[in-house]
Every structure is written in structure tokens, then in C-alpha cells.
Length: 409
Image 1 (tube, rainbow, N blue to C red):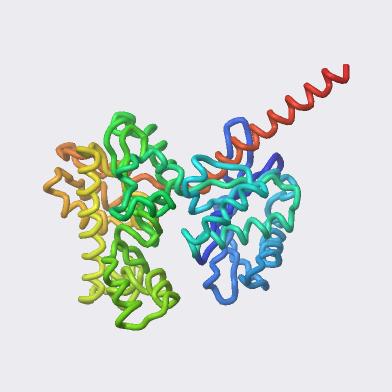
Image 2 (image 1 turned 30 degrees about the vertical axis):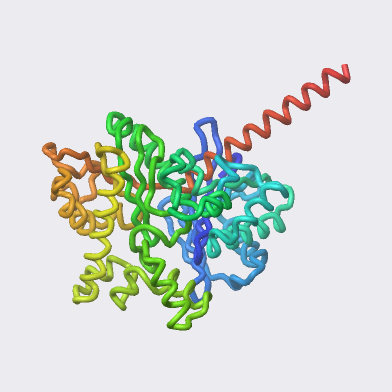
């Protein structure tokens, strides 16, 4: 494979997704994808090149310094792609706080700004920084960029972003930020091509994966979202609780004598669907099990999602479209059906057959709200934002060279 290539790195709390894109006048075109799951023993590189899939064992580990592991990963990728043609790398950063309202080149200044936000995303932010350091160590001169999950929500009104806490704390950054912005940005754009009339109206997107949230969008702009200050907030997730009475945390830290570290570990890894079911955080396994606790976990999941849709509808002042995306949203008809059943009062009516085959549109003609299933692609957004920054850098360099030549003349 020849031509200029771009890599994207999407760091989760326990995985790294890598996209391989070829750059052309039509924009970045994905030619491969890879995943390293740090929970694998031994570590494996899961690689897809066109229709072919590979499972490649890795010798490295996911220690604090990822340079050796990423060096091994890039060597394996180099057997399938011409990595000498890579001219840029784009990274997903979960938290941009109020410091970033769009993608940014990774410089010493922006890296320090990203690092200053570590406390706001303690699982995701340090992981992304480790990746950036590893890539920089391996390729010191490579152009690197950052794309933020929070920037899509910067259009939200100050009132929506506020907690009812003393104003001084709001000014110090204790506010609602919202996440999954790259996914919402991509799906909003896809909706504009598939159903432009709906995209111009009031839309709720349900990003339902192991991490899950919802977003209220009016004419393409984010007005409200279920996640707030952290990725723990909103609806229940695979292992995270969603909205939780602060008194519960005070009870754990006070009378129950749990440490902050113990409570943090519980909230991120032992709550949500896993906590309620005692079995799994995977809705597929819970639906297959069918036991009382498994059913209750799924019922709680769909109840809270439907309730959040009602709240977001209030922010919007109505709903024209409901969009399902991400792993659960795109692939699990029974979950979508359960949510829709709870929204009959809102006028949601699914076409059973369309829903079963996960068609692009799954609502009936009589439904007052159009319901769609649109696959998301965060890596595509990272690649496009990286390419836009790369093009801007090339333009600056070209102007500088032209000006230098004219002065020399």
C-alpha cells in the first residue's frame, strides 16, 4: 500500500484502538484497524486489513512506559502497511475542559494543558498521555494531534452546564462537560446525509456501548447531555453506575469506612450492569442468561435511558428524531425495543422487522418520532481533524517558504 498514511489512537481505560488511514484529496480513507486489549493474557494485537483478520501475540506489557509495547505493535503493523509513509498521528483525548474548543496540535504547551486535566478523567487522560509519549519516543519528529470528546458540547448554555453548588466552585471548573463528543459529531454528520430534514430538527442520540450517554442536539448543535463532570454520570453503563446520590458516596467514605481509592475502583469497575446482575456488564450475556438479576439489570438500563430521553426532550422542547449508535445501540434490537416500549407515550413506534435487522430507519411511518440506527466512527473523526491540522501546518510552511524566497530575491 503506497501513499501518505495517518494513524489514529483511541485510548480507553483498558484498550487502545488504532486506525490506519490513507490520505487523499477525498480525505482520510481507512485501510486497516487494530486493537490492543490490556485485559488479554497474553497481550494480543487484533488486526483487520480489508476482509482479513489477524490475531498476533505480543511480548510486551502495559506498564507505565508504553514505548516498548507500542514499538512492538508498530513493528507488527509494519509487516502489513508501509509505516514509513506515516506523516501524522491523531489521538483521542477524553477531557479538554474549557481549554480546548477544537482539535489541537500536540506541542509542549498543549501537552501541559492536557496533563492539567488529569484529575477530571483519572482513568482515560493519563492513558492517552502515555500513548502520546510512547509515539513521540518512537517517532520524535512525527506530527501529532489531539481530538477531544468534550469540545462538541461547548455549544451548551451555561445554565445547562451548572450544578447547584457555590458559584466559586463552578468558576473553578466543577461543571458539566459531557463526553462521547467525537461519536456525536460523526453521527450528526451522517444523519445530515441520510435524513437531512430530521438533522435540522431536534434530535436525541443514544451512544450505547460499555460506556454510554445520550445527547440532545438541535440543528446539529449540542444543547444537553447525560454525562456531566465525569464519565461516571448519567445512565447506567457496563461497570459504571450513572447518576448516583452524593449521599451514597458520603456513606461509603464515612460510616462504611471505605477509602477514596476503594470507592473509585467500585464506581468505575464494579457497578452498572455488572453490579446489578452480579454476572456481567455485557447486555448480550445478560439477555442470554435470563435470570432474575440479569433481567433486572437490563430493565434498569432501559428504564434509565428512557427517563433520560424524557429529560432531554424537555431541554429540546420536543423531539423529531431518536438515533441509536455504538456497540449496544447499533447491534441489539431487543434493547432498542425495550427502550422504545417505554417511550410509547412520546410517540415512538418501531417497525419490528426493520428493528430486528438493524435497518437504517427502524420506526414505522405512523411514529411521531423518526428512529434511526447509525454506526459511529470516532477514529474517522480523529483522522479528519488530524488531517485538517496537518493541511493548515503545510499551508503555514508553504507561506513561510514563499515569503522567505521573495525576501531573498
